[in-house]
Image (cartoon, rainbow, N blue to C red):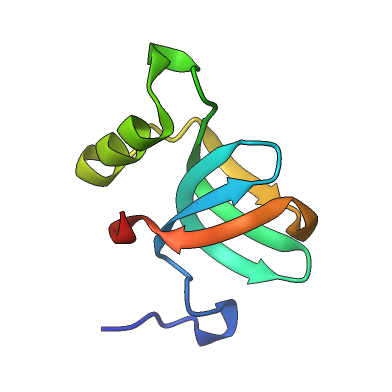
Length: 91
């Protein structure tokens, strides 16, 4: 079953991983992806060597298995900062 909000893009409602140019890794539920950037809901941020000392790979494995703690209710990542956007399920 697909989304009922076709005007919001194919990733609407999908938990995605956004790799940002500054080394940040965001995981959250995609709301919209347009010229303003990508709007994530219930998102978490990972920085290498950050909380818990987890590597990027360890963080993604844990996120894929258990989800993330939603520390950011909403975050808009501008398009110039985005390196990649992939569904969390692809990891």
